Structures are given as structure tokens and as C-alpha cells.
Length: 218
Image (cartoon, rainbow, N blue to C red):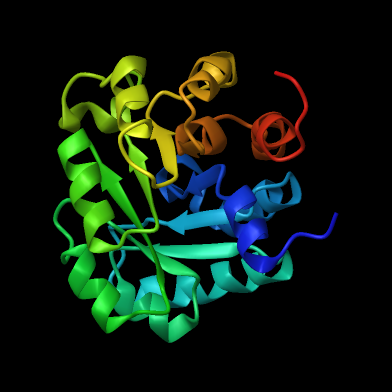
């Protein structure tokens, strides 16, 4: 069955990979990204907060070339202006970003993902026109300690069932807890360290893509 572009995006969104160069040898970052794409990842969020505008723009261009080669989808963290300039699929907004409604009005062609940590926030950004949300941290994970204790699977389920947006579980997600996440009805998962940490990024990604994108059992 041939999927429409919107159906292809929706399916690809179930595996949402967020970059973190600090987990990869800097010189190897682009080849690491290539390995993730080869293993099936198609939705990539470029999230490199430490870069200045010039370096971020240069990296984003290189990242987009590689994603385009796999007919994937690039999201730029926080920078709707850069996403628009590069022809990226969309922007991912945080708690401190401009309001969703404001971004939607100024950049109507961009898809908007939003980080959320509560049901109230999820409902708010849905009302403003967000296209999907990440929710977490669902499980304990060092990278999300600043957001407080893990939300847990029950709160994830509550968000899933009280918003019509695609919800991606974020924080401490592993192959071993995918079945539990899928039972909540969440559309998919968002991953950082589960992809980039460890010596074999291709294998890390393939484990998730086989389950989420190719329909194999975990």
C-alpha cells in the first residue's frame, strides 16, 4: 500500500529522534546521524543549544542534506526562523519558546511539535494549534532530572486519552518498556540517549524502528 505524504509523516513520527552531539564524538556526529537514518529513523529533531547562530545554521544544512536523502523530516529546536529558512518540516517548541499560536500564525507552513510536562500544558498547546507533543519524563532519566520526578505511565495514559494530538513518550524509554508505552495508546516515542549513547547507533536505532516502523514484535 502506498502512503500519502501526510500518512508517511504520521507513521514516521512514531520514532522521533532528538540529537545530542555531546553523546557522540563531535567529528563523528554526521556519520552517526547517517547510521540512525540507515536503520530507519526518519523524524529528527536538531537540538544543539550550545551552538551559535552561524554554527547551528551550518550544521542544520548538513543535517538536512542527509535527512532529505532518506526522504525524512527535520525539526529544528526552538528556531522557527531557521526551520523556515532551511525548508525544514517544522520546529519543536519548549516551555520557554514563543507561544504556539504566535509561531503558527507567523509560520503557517511549519509543523509544530511541543515539549509538555503536564496535561494542562498539553491541552493548552493543542488549543493553540500544535501538531504533536512530547510528554515526559515518563521514566527516570538523567537528562530530564531538571523537570522533576518521572511522570509515570499512568499520567502518560491520562494525557493520551485527554488530547487528540499524537503524543510521544519521552524520558527513560527503552525497548524493554515499549510494550507498556504502546498500551497507553501513545502515538510513539522520542529518544535521545537510547539512540546516541553506546558504540552502535545503527543497532540502537534498528531495535526501535523494527518495532515501531516495521511492525515486528519486541
